[in-house]
Length: 227
Image: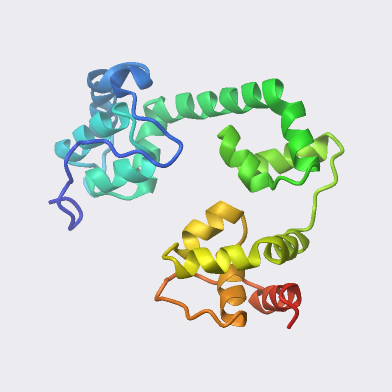
């Protein structure tokens, strides 16, 4: 048991959009990373901050198997801060960040014109970013740098609900979750809840957080449905 949590098995779990490629997915493999982490732990003088051998092994093997930082932390039974600290010291996290930057650069160089054209044609930044495998923030920054006018999210939400509102409500009544609909239509989950409520659709228990400024959001949605 580690920090009150029993370490999980070492089977890697990957986040959406990521792949677990085995030891070949990250340089050095599990054994080499384990050796570096063991040296790092041995150099930590304060016993309170030193991690047990089973935690170190869980970090090395799950990370080398392709797991995300979040999943490595869950596997090892420690916080993400500890995982990031050890991987950073071992030089493993820096490699991942370099690979991510390389991926973003390649995507924007090869598909930049296509992404700009699709956005200007009406596609949302969220949907385009998800398809390209980059963050929506990165894509918006790129669009702004290329002189593309960014559309207002509230105006986009209003337009989507006016066009697809009946379809969205029908999908929810047929069993789709609010999270599913948020991904499908690239609009805020809170906006969908407000829209469904204003349309008289009974909500199932579908937990989630409302964003700040929900009153303004509510006004925009109600305007979209003509109420």
